[in-house]
Image 1 (cartoon, one colour):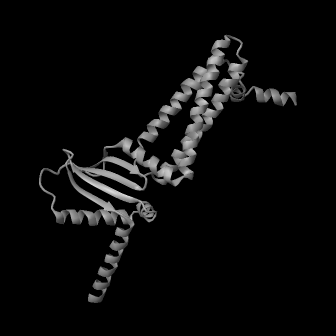
Image 2 (spheres, one colour):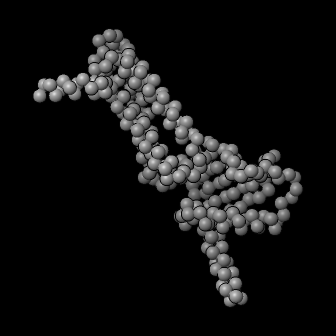
Image 3 (tube, one colour):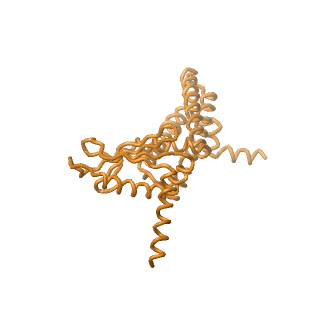
Length: 242
Protein backbone atom coordinates (compact mmCIF):
# COMPACT_ATOMS: atom_id res chain seq x y z
CA UNK A 1 0.00 0.00 0.00
CA UNK A 2 2.80 2.42 0.93
CA UNK A 3 4.56 1.59 -2.34
CA UNK A 4 1.45 2.56 -4.34
CA UNK A 5 1.16 5.86 -2.47
CA UNK A 6 4.83 6.62 -3.08
CA UNK A 7 4.41 5.86 -6.80
CA UNK A 8 1.51 8.29 -6.97
CA UNK A 9 3.51 10.91 -5.06
CA UNK A 10 6.34 10.59 -7.57
CA UNK A 11 4.05 11.86 -10.34
CA UNK A 12 5.16 15.45 -10.96
CA UNK A 13 1.70 16.85 -11.72
CA UNK A 14 0.17 15.22 -8.65
CA UNK A 15 2.94 16.70 -6.51
CA UNK A 16 2.37 20.06 -8.23
CA UNK A 17 -1.34 19.90 -7.39
CA UNK A 18 -0.57 18.96 -3.77
CA UNK A 19 1.71 21.98 -3.35
CA UNK A 20 4.85 19.87 -3.04
CA UNK A 21 6.68 21.81 -5.77
CA UNK A 22 8.50 24.99 -4.70
CA UNK A 23 6.50 28.22 -4.73
CA UNK A 24 8.81 30.05 -7.23
CA UNK A 25 8.52 27.14 -9.70
CA UNK A 26 4.76 26.78 -9.22
CA UNK A 27 4.05 30.49 -9.46
CA UNK A 28 6.46 31.74 -12.14
CA UNK A 29 6.54 28.72 -14.43
CA UNK A 30 3.18 26.98 -14.13
CA UNK A 31 0.95 29.88 -13.11
CA UNK A 32 2.55 32.92 -14.73
CA UNK A 33 4.39 31.62 -17.83
CA UNK A 34 2.20 28.64 -18.87
CA UNK A 35 -0.99 30.57 -18.09
CA UNK A 36 0.31 33.45 -20.22
CA UNK A 37 0.88 31.09 -23.16
CA UNK A 38 -2.60 29.56 -22.81
CA UNK A 39 -4.32 32.95 -22.56
CA UNK A 40 -2.35 34.44 -25.45
CA UNK A 41 -3.02 31.46 -27.70
CA UNK A 42 -6.72 31.28 -26.88
CA UNK A 43 -7.14 35.06 -27.29
CA UNK A 44 -5.45 34.92 -30.70
CA UNK A 45 -7.75 32.06 -31.74
CA UNK A 46 -10.96 33.74 -30.56
CA UNK A 47 -10.02 37.14 -32.02
CA UNK A 48 -9.49 35.59 -35.46
CA UNK A 49 -12.72 33.61 -35.60
CA UNK A 50 -15.20 34.55 -38.35
CA UNK A 51 -18.60 36.06 -37.55
CA UNK A 52 -20.39 32.79 -38.34
CA UNK A 53 -18.74 29.76 -36.73
CA UNK A 54 -18.63 26.35 -38.35
CA UNK A 55 -19.52 23.28 -36.26
CA UNK A 56 -15.84 22.37 -35.85
CA UNK A 57 -14.91 25.91 -34.83
CA UNK A 58 -17.71 25.89 -32.25
CA UNK A 59 -16.50 22.59 -30.75
CA UNK A 60 -12.88 23.79 -30.71
CA UNK A 61 -13.96 27.04 -29.01
CA UNK A 62 -15.83 25.11 -26.32
CA UNK A 63 -12.86 22.77 -25.78
CA UNK A 64 -10.40 25.68 -25.44
CA UNK A 65 -12.68 27.51 -23.00
CA UNK A 66 -13.25 24.43 -20.82
CA UNK A 67 -9.54 23.49 -20.88
CA UNK A 68 -8.56 27.06 -19.87
CA UNK A 69 -11.04 27.05 -16.97
CA UNK A 70 -9.94 23.64 -15.65
CA UNK A 71 -6.25 24.47 -15.97
CA UNK A 72 -6.80 27.75 -14.10
CA UNK A 73 -8.60 25.93 -11.27
CA UNK A 74 -5.84 23.31 -11.14
CA UNK A 75 -2.96 25.80 -11.02
CA UNK A 76 -4.66 28.19 -8.59
CA UNK A 77 -5.09 25.33 -6.11
CA UNK A 78 -1.46 24.34 -6.72
CA UNK A 79 -0.19 27.87 -6.02
CA UNK A 80 -2.32 28.16 -2.85
CA UNK A 81 -1.05 24.84 -1.49
CA UNK A 82 2.54 25.62 -2.45
CA UNK A 83 2.27 28.97 -0.66
CA UNK A 84 0.91 27.18 2.42
CA UNK A 85 3.85 24.74 2.36
CA UNK A 86 6.41 27.46 1.58
CA UNK A 87 9.37 27.45 4.01
CA UNK A 88 10.71 30.84 2.95
CA UNK A 89 9.31 34.35 3.33
CA UNK A 90 5.72 34.35 4.58
CA UNK A 91 5.27 37.75 2.96
CA UNK A 92 5.66 36.36 -0.57
CA UNK A 93 3.57 33.33 0.35
CA UNK A 94 0.75 35.66 1.46
CA UNK A 95 1.15 37.80 -1.69
CA UNK A 96 0.78 34.64 -3.79
CA UNK A 97 -2.41 33.73 -1.91
CA UNK A 98 -3.88 37.22 -2.44
CA UNK A 99 -3.16 36.92 -6.18
CA UNK A 100 -4.87 33.50 -6.15
CA UNK A 101 -7.98 35.01 -4.52
CA UNK A 102 -8.24 37.80 -7.12
CA UNK A 103 -7.69 35.34 -9.96
CA UNK A 104 -10.29 32.96 -8.55
CA UNK A 105 -12.86 35.77 -8.41
CA UNK A 106 -12.07 36.70 -12.02
CA UNK A 107 -12.24 33.03 -13.05
CA UNK A 108 -15.64 32.66 -11.36
CA UNK A 109 -16.99 35.62 -13.34
CA UNK A 110 -15.59 34.27 -16.63
CA UNK A 111 -17.00 30.80 -15.92
CA UNK A 112 -20.39 32.34 -15.13
CA UNK A 113 -20.35 34.27 -18.43
CA UNK A 114 -19.26 31.14 -20.32
CA UNK A 115 -22.08 29.07 -18.80
CA UNK A 116 -24.62 31.84 -19.38
CA UNK A 117 -23.72 31.88 -23.08
CA UNK A 118 -25.15 28.36 -23.34
CA UNK A 119 -28.10 28.73 -20.98
CA UNK A 120 -29.41 32.25 -21.65
CA UNK A 121 -30.33 32.90 -25.28
CA UNK A 122 -30.76 36.65 -24.78
CA UNK A 123 -27.39 37.00 -23.07
CA UNK A 124 -25.69 34.92 -25.78
CA UNK A 125 -27.23 37.12 -28.51
CA UNK A 126 -26.18 40.36 -26.82
CA UNK A 127 -22.68 39.00 -26.24
CA UNK A 128 -22.29 37.85 -29.86
CA UNK A 129 -23.31 41.28 -31.16
CA UNK A 130 -20.89 42.98 -28.74
CA UNK A 131 -18.12 40.71 -30.02
CA UNK A 132 -19.12 41.56 -33.59
CA UNK A 133 -18.95 45.27 -32.80
CA UNK A 134 -15.40 44.82 -31.44
CA UNK A 135 -14.31 43.28 -34.75
CA UNK A 136 -15.73 46.02 -36.96
CA UNK A 137 -15.07 47.09 -39.64
CA UNK A 138 -15.72 43.68 -41.19
CA UNK A 139 -15.41 43.13 -44.91
CA UNK A 140 -18.56 41.52 -46.35
CA UNK A 141 -17.73 41.87 -50.02
CA UNK A 142 -15.37 43.86 -52.21
CA UNK A 143 -17.36 47.07 -51.72
CA UNK A 144 -19.32 46.52 -48.49
CA UNK A 145 -18.21 46.65 -44.85
CA UNK A 146 -20.07 46.28 -41.56
CA UNK A 147 -18.99 49.29 -39.52
CA UNK A 148 -21.35 49.10 -36.53
CA UNK A 149 -23.41 46.50 -34.68
CA UNK A 150 -25.59 47.09 -31.65
CA UNK A 151 -28.56 45.73 -29.73
CA UNK A 152 -31.06 47.58 -27.57
CA UNK A 153 -33.61 45.29 -25.94
CA UNK A 154 -35.28 43.65 -28.97
CA UNK A 155 -33.88 46.02 -31.58
CA UNK A 156 -30.79 44.91 -33.51
CA UNK A 157 -28.85 47.48 -35.53
CA UNK A 158 -26.33 47.01 -38.32
CA UNK A 159 -24.56 49.74 -40.27
CA UNK A 160 -23.08 48.96 -43.68
CA UNK A 161 -20.61 51.18 -45.50
CA UNK A 162 -20.71 51.16 -49.31
CA UNK A 163 -17.13 51.85 -50.33
CA UNK A 164 -17.68 52.80 -53.96
CA UNK A 165 -20.86 54.81 -53.54
CA UNK A 166 -20.23 58.46 -54.31
CA UNK A 167 -22.41 61.54 -53.98
CA UNK A 168 -25.06 60.33 -56.44
CA UNK A 169 -28.60 60.10 -55.14
CA UNK A 170 -30.05 56.75 -54.13
CA UNK A 171 -33.42 56.65 -55.88
CA UNK A 172 -36.59 55.44 -54.20
CA UNK A 173 -36.73 52.59 -56.71
CA UNK A 174 -33.27 51.43 -55.66
CA UNK A 175 -34.26 51.76 -52.01
CA UNK A 176 -37.32 49.56 -52.59
CA UNK A 177 -35.24 46.96 -54.42
CA UNK A 178 -32.68 46.99 -51.63
CA UNK A 179 -35.41 46.62 -49.01
CA UNK A 180 -36.86 43.60 -50.86
CA UNK A 181 -33.44 41.95 -51.06
CA UNK A 182 -32.58 42.65 -47.42
CA UNK A 183 -36.00 41.50 -46.22
CA UNK A 184 -35.76 38.22 -48.13
CA UNK A 185 -32.19 37.60 -46.94
CA UNK A 186 -33.17 38.27 -43.31
CA UNK A 187 -36.35 36.21 -43.44
CA UNK A 188 -34.62 33.29 -45.15
CA UNK A 189 -31.80 33.18 -42.61
CA UNK A 190 -32.73 30.61 -39.94
CA UNK A 191 -31.20 32.50 -36.99
CA UNK A 192 -32.65 35.86 -38.02
CA UNK A 193 -36.04 34.32 -38.76
CA UNK A 194 -36.21 32.74 -35.30
CA UNK A 195 -35.37 36.09 -33.70
CA UNK A 196 -38.04 37.85 -35.76
CA UNK A 197 -40.60 35.32 -34.52
CA UNK A 198 -39.59 36.32 -30.99
CA UNK A 199 -40.54 39.94 -31.85
CA UNK A 200 -37.00 41.14 -32.50
CA UNK A 201 -36.62 43.87 -35.13
CA UNK A 202 -33.67 44.41 -37.46
CA UNK A 203 -32.52 47.87 -38.54
CA UNK A 204 -30.08 48.17 -41.42
CA UNK A 205 -28.36 51.46 -42.15
CA UNK A 206 -26.40 52.04 -45.37
CA UNK A 207 -23.87 54.83 -45.54
CA UNK A 208 -21.24 56.15 -47.91
CA UNK A 209 -17.54 56.19 -47.14
CA UNK A 210 -18.05 59.74 -45.85
CA UNK A 211 -20.66 58.44 -43.37
CA UNK A 212 -23.63 59.93 -45.27
CA UNK A 213 -26.74 57.80 -44.73
CA UNK A 214 -28.34 56.74 -48.02
CA UNK A 215 -30.82 54.11 -46.85
CA UNK A 216 -32.52 52.84 -43.70
CA UNK A 217 -34.33 49.50 -43.69
CA UNK A 218 -36.43 47.98 -40.94
CA UNK A 219 -37.34 44.29 -41.01
CA UNK A 220 -39.98 42.75 -38.73
CA UNK A 221 -41.74 39.42 -38.62
CA UNK A 222 -44.75 41.07 -40.31
CA UNK A 223 -42.51 41.93 -43.26
CA UNK A 224 -41.56 38.25 -43.56
CA UNK A 225 -45.18 37.17 -43.44
CA UNK A 226 -46.07 39.71 -46.14
CA UNK A 227 -43.06 38.73 -48.25
CA UNK A 228 -44.01 35.05 -48.07
CA UNK A 229 -47.59 35.92 -48.93
CA UNK A 230 -46.47 37.92 -51.98
CA UNK A 231 -44.23 35.08 -53.11
CA UNK A 232 -47.06 32.58 -52.77
CA UNK A 233 -49.39 34.81 -54.79
CA UNK A 234 -46.76 35.26 -57.50
CA UNK A 235 -46.08 31.53 -57.54
CA UNK A 236 -49.80 30.83 -57.92
CA UNK A 237 -50.13 33.35 -60.78
CA UNK A 238 -47.17 31.80 -62.63
CA UNK A 239 -48.62 28.35 -62.05
CA UNK A 240 -51.96 29.35 -63.57
CA UNK A 241 -50.29 30.98 -66.56
CA UNK A 242 -48.26 27.87 -67.27
